[in-house]
Length: 228
Image 1 (cartoon, rainbow, N blue to C red):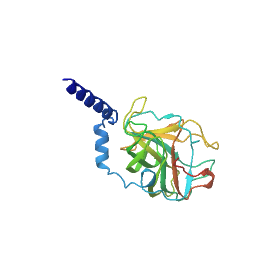
Image 2 (image 1 turned 90 degrees about the vertical axis):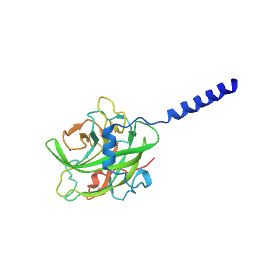
Image 3 (image 1 turned 135 degrees about the horizontal axis):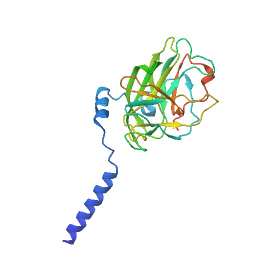
Image 4 (image 1 turned 135 degrees about the vertical axis):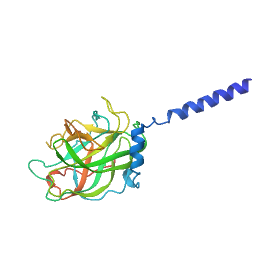
């Protein structure tokens, strides 16, 4: 009887440890979105290898909070003119760097999340250029190829992380945001419905999202993307 009890306790302890590693269940919306968008080939930094180019950095590199707002929205940065300097006649986005605070509801490890690119906003709507299912590591910089996408004659483009859950606090895939700015560039945060590209709204922060490309003004370059 004693041997049986010890075996039962050992099995119980093993089960408890295993349960701590189980990720939160994914919603039907997340599952459907992922099935419709296969995972991109994984390379260095959590996605396809990044390509060289000018780096646009609006954040100071500090994680201040998690973006909160409507569910099924992408939260990120609007990359546009700065101090009167336009992006150029034909800006080309080639790579992206993102710092997610949570991936699949976890602050450590890695999982799949959607990084989306939108064109310029007209009213409160923007065209959805792409929404790529990428393997990302939480609470670190992930750099990967995104494009190339050209925006001929466009005053801006937008890059963000899809946050499927809503309410006041994101609990699944969540981008980190910085309430500080760098080089007096102000805030460039935004959110928009990731599925149909509607409901655009500016936000009073800078997402931990950076863009790399060509045809971008040198005035927006501050330092190279780091994966540290």
